[in-house]
Length: 51
Image 1 (cartoon, rainbow, N blue to C red):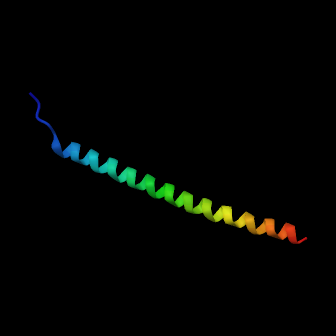
Image 2 (image 1 turned 90 degrees about the vertical axis):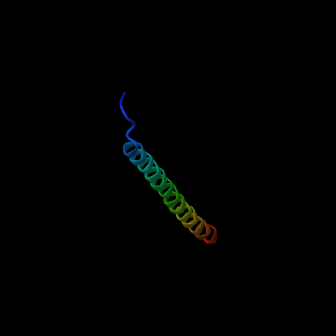
Image 3 (image 1 turned 30 degrees about the vertical axis):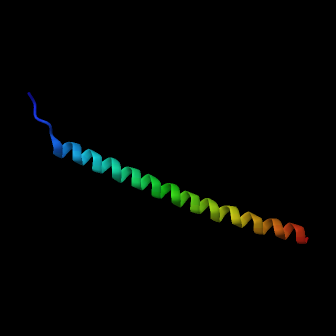
């Protein structure tokens, strides 16, 4: 019977954990960019009300 390769399983878990962490960071960065983009148009709307 074949033996279990624990090193391979551990490496796969580490890679999955790293990928999940990177995805989460990308989502946070996208949310920050969206928040910045959402505040910029509100300033232009105020300019239209002044005219």
